[in-house]
Every structure is written in C-alpha cells, then in structure tokens.
Image (cartoon, rainbow, N blue to C red):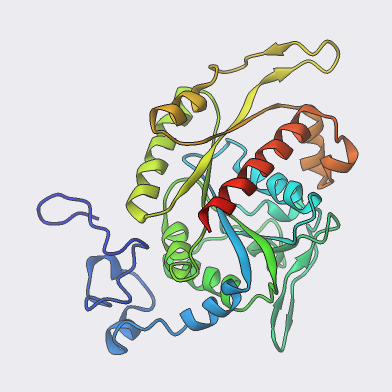
Amino acid sequence: MQKAGGEDEIATAAGCPSDSGMAGRASACEGCPGRELCSQQGGVDPDQAGINVRMNAIRHKVIVLSGKGGVGKSSVAATLAMALAAAGHKVGIVDLDICGPSVPKLLGVEGMPVVNSEYGWLPLKSPHYDIKVMSVGSLLTDADSAIVWRGPRKTGIIKRFLKDTLWGRLDFLIFDTPPGTSDEHLTVLSALKQAKPDGAVLVSTPQDSALVTVRKEITFCNKMGLRILGVVENMAGYVCPCCGEHTDIFSSKGAQKLATEFNLPYLGQVPLDPTLTQQCETGSDIFKAAPNSVSAKAMSTIANTVLEMVKQSR
C-alpha cells in the first residue's frame, strides 16, 4: 500500500484501522470481508472479543516467519513446539500456511479429523507431549485437494482458528505462517493486537537469496511493531555422522552476519541432518528417538533461548 506521497501506509501497528475513525474507509480495508461491518459499528470487530478470551488464556505467543519457501520454516516451528513441550511446557501450534499446510504431518496427526463440538473446535493432540494442533489440512476431506482461496476466506478461517478452537490454558502457542508477508500475517497480527504476541522467530538458510527476503521480513516486523526474538539459520552445513566433520553446503554464517547487522539476537543454527529429515517425514519425535543428534541438541538450545527471550518481554 502506498500513500499519495509514495510513503508506505500502515494505519496501525497491526495494519488494521479497526479501532480508528478510518475503520472501513482506509485503503487498508479494501478487500476485507469485515469492511462494511467496521464502518457501521464504529470499528468494532465482532470476532475480537472471542479471540481475546481464547488468546488471553495463553501465556506466550510466538510467530515463526520466513521470507521465502523451502527454508524449513515449518519443520523449525514444529520442532520448536516439540522442544518446548519436551521441557515440560503446555504447547499448541496453529498452522497458518493455508495453501500449504504441513504441520499435521510433522507432528504425527496427518489424516486425523478435527471434531467440531458444541463449544468449538477440538484441536488435535499430537502423540508427542500432547501438543495441540490446528490446521486447515485437518479440515480437508481430500488431502490432495488444492486450496484456492482469496484473502477474505483466509481471514475468516484464521479468525476461527483463534476464536473457535478450544485451546485452553497453554504456556506457548506457536504460529507457523506462510512464506513472505501476506493476508495471513496481517490478519493474525491484527487479531493478536490486544493479546500482544511475544515476538517473531525468523528462519533463513545461509545463502544470499534467502537473506535478501529475510531483510524484508525484518522491515515488515519493524513496520508492524512486532518484536523479533531472533534469527535461526537452518540447513547450516552438514555434519558427517561417522567422523563429525562439518561441511558447508551453502554460504557460511550468512544469517548470523545479518543478525549482527540489524542488532538482532542470533538464536543458532540447525545443520542438515538426515535424522531430523526422517523424523519430519514420519511425524515422529526426534527428542525421544535421537536426543543426542546434532539437530536435537541445536533445537533444544534454540528453544531454551526463545524461552529466555519471552521471559524478558513480560
């Protein structure tokens, strides 16, 4: 969005002017399904009260972002959820990658249907530490069906994930978002405006093409007033399981240099690990199956760092 003078236009920190006098009339409202209602009700979103009730019962809310696809964002989000749960925390994860949901497979609930009770949707429970899972992938009757939805429909389903899902009391809710910055990101940040997310974890791979898009994610977070908890460098080389030698497949430590450039916390790196790949493919738990693997140790360290970061935000 651009103002007439060419400046970027972000009406509020959450990108939605629903609580301002421009509700329903700002350029940011174009295409929003609630535009007419906002203009009639003085900017009151009828879903917000329900969202606040659900989200206020959750202590920490962490949003996982990536600038481009293929960097392992969802695997990092799912493994982060497992690492936090393995440490004794009550954890849920909501899959906001509407058109490419992969969290159900990663957490071992693929093919399990979501039950819609009289009180709301019952999130699926992963066999790993009872992590609560909600994803559009669990609502489809045909797993091979393409999801061809415009922005308003995506907005509607995300609000239902937040408002109508019986999350209960959790220590952490992890948000796995699609690559880039789109309707899904604007919707969830607007919905969480009053519930105050703790911040974002940015996932990148070491090569320059990925780092270019991470810079855009950093700009996005700054514009939206979203704290950046830190940067994770995924696929950071390969460690031979036989001799332990580390080989850089891509450029080395690009994400670490980027974090230093923007004065952001560097959460650590996760190497290419066949053990983690296998666990992701089968939806099993790497912290039980291979607790001494390089990826399990790396993700445990990252989870502990995230835990310390969110404690500082309160």
